[in-house]
Length: 446
View (tube, rainbow, N blue to C red):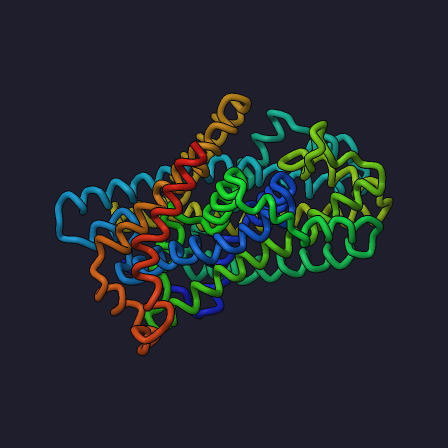
């Protein structure tokens, strides 16, 4: 069976960066910054992203390209020991389940973004009643836009690696960057933006070693890079052997972290611009408002204060969020689709629509039981499942897989890899440092 392959380094980087760059960067990162001491969180996040998330990312990419399979098949291929083969299969299946559950709540949030992007358009065109409907939290709106977003995701995945994932990633990612930079340029001209910039960029070093901040920063790094669930492993399996995998992985991490940082340059100053216009941005404890309150109340209140230009800014902002969500959702859906296509020989379109329908059904169960399930599934997947699976991926790449086999794979695109700083550090780093730190922070979070 022809698995497909990315046609160029640019295509792979855009696809993998798109997988990494999602709501976790554009929404999650700035709101985490707002909730965790501003610049202190930024500093810790940047350190952890490169010191822990990047080595874990490389573990997935290298294993993926070496085995040319999904995680359920790939991890057992790293060993001849029956018990470890079984363990690898269990980790792969756990990753499949986790990624499906992540996409089920992700589709709901992405639907909100898409609906919010339509609101200023409908209102401007005179369809005020419909504009109010798409901007108001409600059962019917959540159902409609969750389904619409999942259909868009499935349609892209149906196209396969080149005509689906790569084709759309190389269009969506540049559009996302352009919209983000234009919004930042405009926001910086408004009163209050410089105060927000100071909060964002000047750290309070007394908070750097706060346990809660460290756990939040690590969770943010893992979630934003889509680690521990096989997304990067499956993308690595589609990468050409001619590419320098270490260099490409560094680019993906750099773009992901860079765009999260740049998104903060928009969101945090925007909060202080909102304060200048009389919008409340602090809670009763004096903390900056974060989460859905920031995105769906504070910022829309700011856009409303801007007059006619606020309509365009609101549309651009929520389109930015929608594009970020879509680039991530296609990588999430590709994980179970690739497994069904490869392991059960199902035609790609059938697998895409079938799995898409199952995930949509679970999304609707969450929608109908929102208060009980929404926060629960987010906590289980991002706070618990992803870090635990991340540890196992590191163990299999660092301990189970023979070192020489890993080096052979890295050398395919970089003949002198054994003499590089990366090879001097990565093998023991992914063996000892990554699992120990991830485990320590996971235990602290409990």
